[in-house]
Image (cartoon, rainbow, N blue to C red; front, side):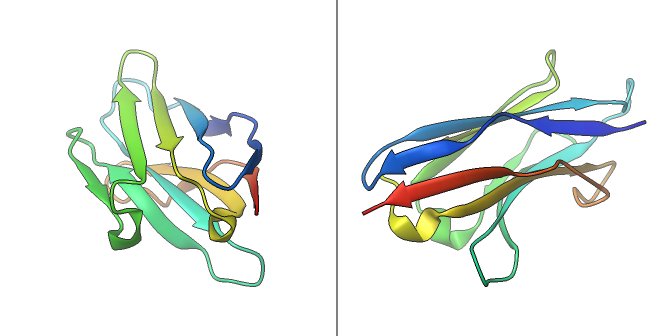
Length: 116
């Protein structure tokens, strides 16, 4: 059974930084893709960044160097580092994974709140 567990989010002031992690289990030795999504209050969920099954990383255009993801294959962990946070970065952040498309399995989500 595949499980994704995000670390606890938090509250920071505008301009601050926050790091989230996602630990994945259940894929065994299969290669898989993993991604971060987020959903602001009242908005649709949007893609943030992906590490594909080969470890290649892609970011959504809005990231613009503000966020960085890193993958520890040995620990089955994907880390999302967020800097220069703005109030509009507030929302639920979700980790997702899949053998090819990282949307088959989802974590429970973790709240990030950025105050002005």
